[in-house]
Image (cartoon, rainbow, N blue to C red; front, side, top):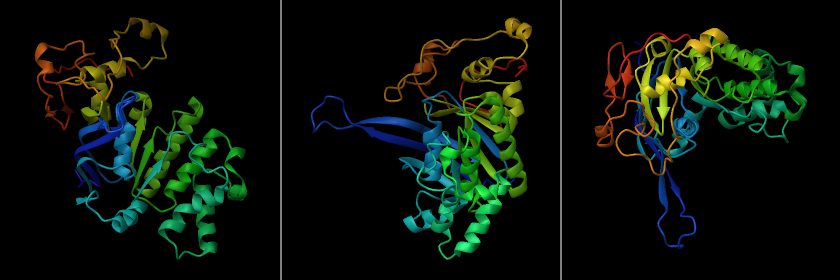
Length: 334
């Protein structure tokens, strides 16, 4: 196993939330978006991150990129702690880590042409690059993501959603980064366009040796593109394994429920399968349950699950799970 390109150790992200209807001097409440998340990602590999809305996936991604502050823990880049870097060093580091956002049209400035949008990171990280070289690099990158360089002077509203996401990918790759964080990059796209974007990311990964952190709700999409998958619930990582191992042998009850929620194309197989259903709704991250955060919806919860946060255990083959009562399951048809 190669040395990690990126590693988080007990990473936590906390937001201050003002009290509603309280006195002005009332202290703000804390929202724990991410709690002690530990992950690693090797060069040229893809780590998938899945979980329900509100589980903390985007907060974790933005903490890694540096757009939200880390309240505790470490973010290591080739062993060096990014959090402790000064502002200049963090800015220089930014060219190595770029981000692709969920809504492709909202992520692009409507007052800028496509050429200006894609070239903007070059002006930030390579201010001495001439306009001619920057324009040539932008044209090459647009062609690389499947867009005609002749469209460089058009505006985002003149493109489809899939094309806008390709523009966003071109913008992220223009600085030749080593890691691209994809925050639900296909959730706003049609199914057929989703496949095109996922295939494009895989092709660019092979060509450029990129590492990807791929966040999505759809476990079938994450399985297709990822080497390893981490499952997140209410700010905590509850299971991590290789994509094939996680789908074939999920151990955490939340992972099993996520896999069961993915429909099967065959109606006969869909009717015959056992489908565990999650009861209740995701608790508020401002008032998480004591002990195991999943216990209020867990079908196998016991009384002692409320006593302490379960430790993450390695159950073999680098398969990590945070449930003391975990058990295997039959291979899923996912």
